[in-house]
Length: 561
Image (cartoon, rainbow, N blue to C red; front, side, top):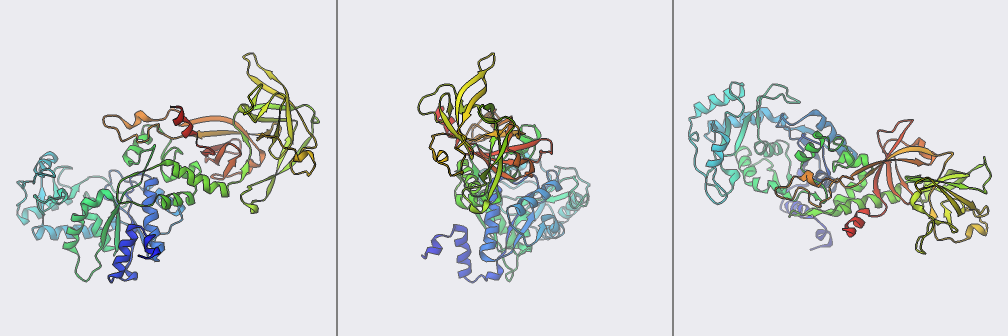
């Protein structure tokens, strides 16, 4: 086996084998088939990156096909959001298609099934049908409607289509084998009655095809060569092939379904039904809440398309279900932003410092590097004055030798500025420090080249000039759940594991260069983490979301437990 072959994932190996066995490279076509019943999440990103990645690897077209067969749950809003997410990730589809494009053809094929005795109308209750299907270890039994005449089946199917029968009263079932080892082959439902307007076809139809009846035939009509599904559809493959046996001709390209394990992420839920529950119950502020695992939520939080693609590639694809540690996703965004995000200064929990020997009324603009990891990032000017803000936690009246920040009688360097020394402090009635009085070494300005500027002190603090500080709302996001597998506990509601501290809103101060920042602009607040501008920002009020901390604060919480 060559080194190149060893590097292939198992889906790519299947495709290489097919090419070696005579499949022409020009026949390759892939598809990503989301159902527009919710927003895409990080799990869908794995499938997006896999299918569109195959298209890029083999220079083959990839269809975007919306599986829009359930009008009760599907909306145009979701269609638009899905397209936006895929484009944002950097992928382009060849054709935008919809399962509803094929409703007429699927209906005609269903009629042929009925005429050939391969399908029948069943008007039993769901419970009766389920009881007759048996179990995985016990065969099913034929129902009383299995041998209806072709004429009666056609008449009833016409009544279903014409809206003359009630929802849930009748279904069309394929006539396969009630004793088959695979439960999905025991006369599966092909059509059900749904008297709901469709977001594309309106009220044209009141019967809608089931996913299994739609999936393979849509692949066939689009000439998809490889239909890549998640692992839960592996047991559906027999049915996928069975339907294709009846509609494909020998000369036509026959799609091949293959499966990979869906992406599961620790400390979150990936069920669209449960995510919708969080939205509808107001647990989160919409599908794009930065705590959500949706692509739109991650984007709003400050994640880059490149970080998500890198995460999907690094996590890889598997044949077995597994859980990917969210720490890998956080590593990918930190690694990406470390290279690209400008460095700025913001103070989240401010206390005032007065530099008593700095001239009153004077200000100066100091040069600061935008990103020391990127020489091309350039520099910016940061204002300095007699009064500045620092973080409250960066000052103690007295501390041990391991505290390298500001304490009485000791020195620290202000980032890009001067060395200061704490001389005294002022407290309120409750004993809280409200102001620190310092002196500064006027010859110690960073980058001045003076001997004093080369002087080494152990601590360096970020700061913001009081006179020039820009007030900002900062939203500190943490993991939405406190349990690694919140939906993995029997008889326990997944919402019982919600993290009460998943969002903290604080009032902070940032340097004035950020007044020009726009929605989704990303920055490293030095010593604090990575942040991005939120869409709620206005000219009068900046809003920043914390994307990820510089250090893994969650690991510290786990240790404390």
